[in-house]
Image 1: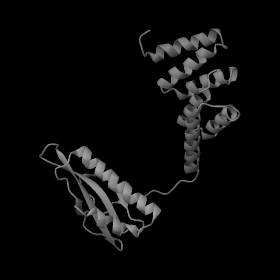
Image 2 (image 1 turned 135 degrees about the vertical axis):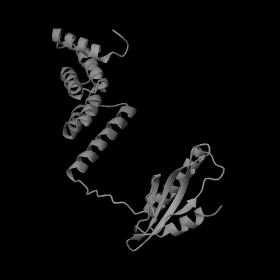
Image 3 (image 1 turned 30 degrees about the horizontal axis):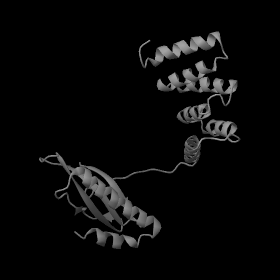
Image 4 (image 1 turned 90 degrees about the vertical axis):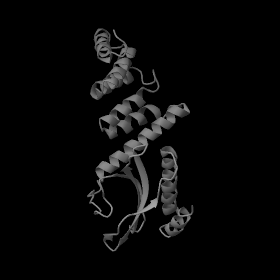
Length: 224
């Protein structure tokens, strides 16, 4: 059998459990091989059989099964198997944190699907939208100010440059976006760090203090 030949491995594990349905290691390895092949339903059945034979034979099995349930979008089963197996079990801290993160993820997705939010994106007009890539953006809480990064093709090396742009909205009309921060003698990696730091700072200020701090944040950012 060739290395990483998960299809052949899966076939061998399936044969093994045909001869011995109590072969728990074969069920576990079958689940692992099926995961590698993106065969989530086969993986789920294999891990389920392993847990039925011995819940705590391999402690992470229920966590692996829960991850498969996440792929299958079966959030109720995910939460149930974690509760059934791990509620009364003392766990290593690392596994406990993974389980809690997975449980929170499932609960969030379940709630999001149950309560969909309308999403109807609209172009902001020629004064902002362009053929260039636009990303790393932040919007003032009252919706009157937009800051975004624009990536523009260049004949220099590297073959592009980034500009931080700012646009204001008067009533329902956006004004022409203006260059707010230019690439001047900085490497792209350093520029990216500056952009991320700037936008993270502004977003945190919005959350903690409110829209009023924007004016202060912008004034500070203009200092060279």
